[in-house]
Length: 404
Image 1 (cartoon, rainbow, N blue to C red):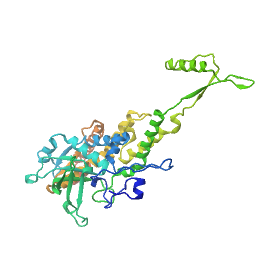
Image 2 (cartoon, helix red, strand yellow):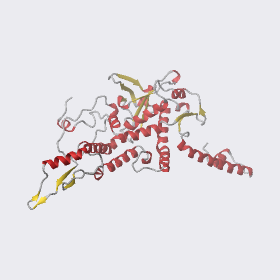
Image 3 (cartoon, rainbow, N blue to C red):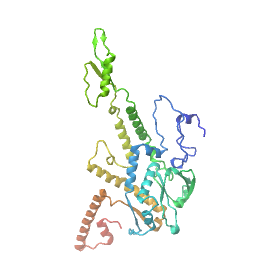
Image 4 (spheres, one colour):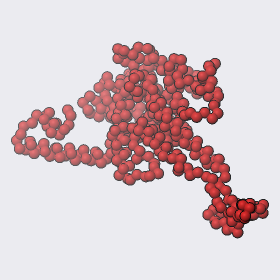
């Protein structure tokens, strides 16, 4: 591959000639060919390689892992069109054993990580006889290529939008996967129906600053140099009198032989001049904290559920976890299941998949409050009926605030 003048200086292109992004790239990005010395300009990371950023930036991985583990804590349940729970179905059998290596929690975890990195996630789920399925294998999004049909309007089914998928194995061999054998989940960017742009792109600046902060701290630690100067303070009418060689050697030897926090006692008249610079004055940790907040906000989580130097109270952490579940985790997991039900054909049968988190201790208080409210409304309804007021079934449900 030939590089033009600008590519050879500035490195890789953001997009290839076809405008493909992240998940459609099989080849590794070319490294920067040349570098400038002493150029005073901002250095930004390449967000196309989201997996590498996930592996090398601890703040990014901590947020994505936390989100994935919270989403994976759900229990999927099936309900028919009347709201009655279904306890026997091929989907539940698949959930019990999705593949030879993973539990369903592992599957949801993998789908969440891929969604966080690429806004696209894929599950190989081949159709069996009678439209049932017994295998679900989450695939790495950066190894899947979507071959779109080019037709996006008036398409009612996914096979009208996508012709097929190409999956690349580690040995670079390619396997074609039919549309009906793949579950494709995408978090929309508001513009693209398929292949949305990853939210990692919007984190280009804070992620770059985090890497720069770690690099700066490492340079300060590894290249600390001399920590200070002990200079002679002797003087006469002619000016300062330098230490002789024996005095220098004696003080230096004494310094090397002492343990931490021991005091040097010398008859030489010397003055200490520090040469180190306090890292706190560089505000590296404040910058790191601000960048971490940007990542947390991008994934809809709360700062208080993560470790912090300042610390958080138990009440703040508990409320933050509850807020993350109600505002982000439960809606996003439910959205994943709604799409899954549609693509697996369950919606045509009037079956819905519900992401159930009610078993989690942090949400038990909410369930108890709901039960108390329902009991109060039930008592009120009983008093109304006892008083001789005749209510229809719809009116009774309205008093209980229960949807029909």
